[in-house]
Image (cartoon, rainbow, N blue to C red):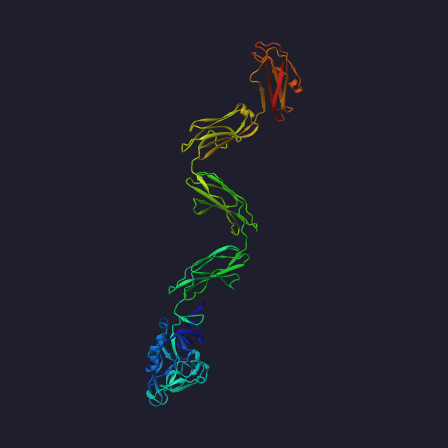
Length: 622
């Protein structure tokens, strides 16, 4: 509902006042002070009833001074009381100019004006005020509505009563040719609004006027109300950057209302620079959300307050914001959070890449929730992983991640299930070598010393492994020195190359791992029987077969003996026979401690550096 001040209404416009049983229409006939004859109290909006309110005598006796006339008493004692009480407060008490006396038969009169004028609220207009100018009773000035009419007929002075044209009273006495007691007063006849005289005891229409507070409010249909509109909302906040297709939040400051009947707010949006507006919200809140259509060039919002009587404040308009029509990235492709989360330890989180329609992907925002509380951002950037530090004492932790682009458009969240936090302290492994230390090249067996402790004193099981394969497992004694030994046959079975030793210490709730690496590099091998093979009689011949791969430039020899139990066995070279796959005939024929067979194979890499291997050595003797 639009509403304006009464003082801004144009002269000649119609307003409504609630007087009597029904609202009556009034004309705005003047704005401000009509002239120098008027007291300052007459400065305001002059309203004149559009049709005669009543038909009454001007005075009940033949006496024509307006201040004592019955019509003056009627207006200010009876009619005034028919207006709403709140309207009455805004009808000004004015001092209106009037003829105060008439003397002699030549029309001599006196006028009380200015501060000496007649004090009243409602009054009849005088001849000068309605555009007549006669020398026999000048007691006013021409009102704007009647300017330039003169004494001729005019529809502006035609008044109806009950739908029929009626003559109507002015407040001037008929001063020509009489005294106060002559009983004549001026009226306007029904025929074209011409002035005429009439007997004060005759019936004529009562068309009264009043000067009203110009700060009264007038609504759309012209009704004057003493209810004031709310103040304009203080501020209207919208985002400085708006993406097409996104939902934004608008907020505005609270309005006030002098009558405490503020009811709510209306919010409108314009997508064409303010040419057309569409209402998006009405209600009692001071904020709302709105979806800005994708493809919109710009957007403006405005808000106003309204009260329970429908009066509205002025609009508060936002800045015009250019809309960025940018699509948000896709949701990151999955979020990986380890099942086991250890309090006081780092936790590695990763997620899949997003895509963006405009190829302006900027990065990812990772958020964390602890114990079901608020989400907080722990990482923003282009990486696809983040290592978080878990505080000991947390019960649960959850993560979610979303992508964003250079226009600050965000994807939806990829969410991982909450994980329980294990607040048990893992066992501590103390080793002579720091974790992940390279131990260098090993060509023979070796051992690593370590010990294990546990803050809670829990029972701990240790697992030793080589390249992930179980070496041994045992219940460790806390604080005691231990050795991870890799030698003998076990070392021999390892292929040349890089290997990893791992020591895992675990209690019922958590575990710790200590890993070390080394490189096995063996370039020579020697193979013999740990125990010679004894014979019942002389050994005269043998045969050996060596399977595997021996490079051509390798230094390779095979020797055999038939008196292996003697203090100084006789070793005979049978390399050629082995290569040829033929028997070797022993030259030695004596054995002080009895005949016994053994062989000794030696091989070492040649200059080419090519390695080889042995898979089996087979043979026999007799």
